[in-house]
Image 1 (cartoon, rainbow, N blue to C red):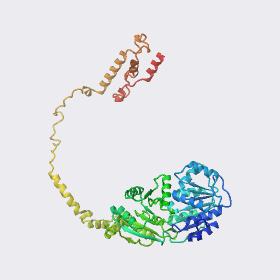
Image 2 (tube, rainbow, N blue to C red):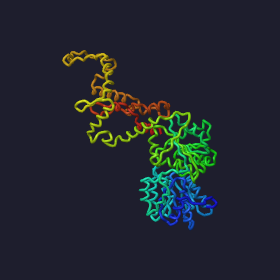
Image 3 (cartoon, rainbow, N blue to C red):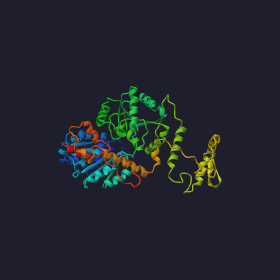
Image 4 (tube, helix red, strand yellow):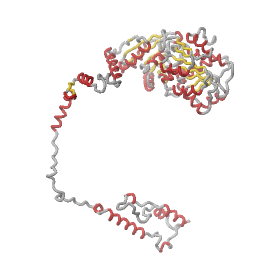
Length: 551
């Protein structure tokens, strides 16, 4: 610890480390950047230092939601356990599985993994969790957001009942607390700050801009502030690529990071940013949890996060370990609802800011967006939200139509004046159309015998004949053609026929694929035969007989 530069423990470390050394379960909640990783890593090293691990049976397990966070925990483990003979394995997606198998075969003391790759190796029989005595679930709320909770529940079911479980997170939603009650046994709850609170060392600001002015506002804000290095968060991966290309085009030293990139590219980009080779890093929420970047001066929210908890994690990348940080958010009028959710979660409003040279957003537009969002949320929750009660919400429907300029009719049917005016020009158009020729009535039509006969079209004589007559002619023609063939088996000159070797190859091929090689047509469908039955098909049996004779 002295070589690392740690002198005094943080509040979460001071309260959690003694409880972990006692062997009790811990439910820890603290602000991001307060040292939760060292709060469970340091006591684990002390507990595991007394014995050795077995092959494919790790002694402790640390579950992380993202690969970057798992890599950072592995780096801290190496740094803290520099003078200890403990081994670790990092199981994350995007890396060679053969190398991970080789490390597990030697035996590891600490297994740091993401749920997906851990279950993959377990299903392949490459890892056993029967000897795992310590389980750490880090960033449990992020596990819930990413859909890892079913995987975590399965992993916990594979662990021994007698174990020590540690829960650490920056936010503690009710769902996470219910999971903690299911996983933990008589835990010690440690909360050093209010859940979802923002560090006091961070200077926050909110800038309302138009949708088309967002990129220009971001560029002016970066130039105005003394930005040493900064993370720029977007909600979608597509927006990350678009904003990265835009900043690159305007001459900024920028990189991109999101989940669709290859793992090697993600690690290389993050390493360049940590080494100050990149000034700006446009990223998705994959970099919003637990990543420690020393001396990060600014965080920009290009998009207001969909989940209010992500705002706490995003701006928590700056202002860590007592340093000062700046976090600015760009918002449009359509994002007013998300801004209100963030302010409600943190318990305080975000101070507004302005940027010179850009058109300000009308406050009435923001309030209108909030009201419109409120009406949208009320729809579909019952008849009372629509203005009526029960099934017969006539009063509510009548009120809504009156607001739209309509009036009620007698008998319960109501119709708006606007609709009546819209139909007026349509009626005029219908009157201008020429009237259709009236069809004669049934009495005025001529009798069937008096109607003129249709003229017979040429080439259609066969249609006038009955089906039986057609069938007889087809069968007679087929029988005549079959009997008249030279290769008929009953002909006497069959014996004097030339041998197969003397015939030209072309004649043999034509004879093999001749369509009339089936003999007379077969009658089996009564008075009518389907069309497909009248098409002869080559007989492979006769071909085999000819080949046998030639052989």
